Image 1 (spheres, rainbow, N blue to C red):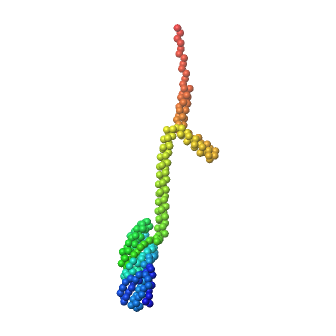
Image 2: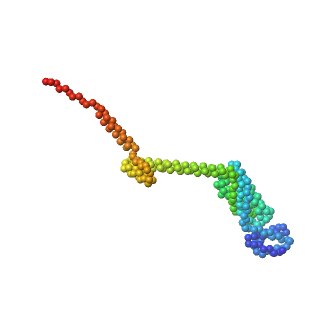
Image 3: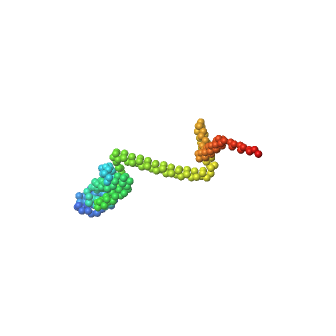
Length: 254
């Protein structure tokens, strides 16, 4: 009863007749039976899951959020004297802090700014637990459960966003293609032979499919101009044919 072993990751808080005498380091320690008491305090980091909490966000959306916290004792004397049960106290204050911090954010902020929320929760917990001789080293949101109706609404929103980006990309492509076609038309107007080569290339592309119909593309404006000239020549020829021949002038007798 007078021998205690303090392990490497522990510290012993020695009480003598109810008063704190000091902290005992790891090793073999002797105490006076009945008079002394040596509770051991672990200095290792403790993993504490925070059970799922039903929280209403700032934009009135109900979500279930669970988290996990990591803490360790930094002052063995305070952890024994100041508070009765360190683990239970941190568990309760962590749940309350989680509801308070998440309730100040909207759903979009809760989903996108988890790092800031984790930091806020840890800061609030540290301010409370340092008086107990405990330091909160890390807080992480572990799981966020959304209502089914909200999941469907977010899926529709994401689909609409993707469609918007697709239409914007298609419009940008049409704009670039129109600009390229304008440059190509300017080049063909400057070089008439380029248009003929493009027509021959179109014929080659059509022939690859082995179609029974062959199309001979021709410049539309030049075809209309030739047709107009042909009609003008035909009209002029018809008018010349319908004109009566000139009558002979009579010769007067001498």
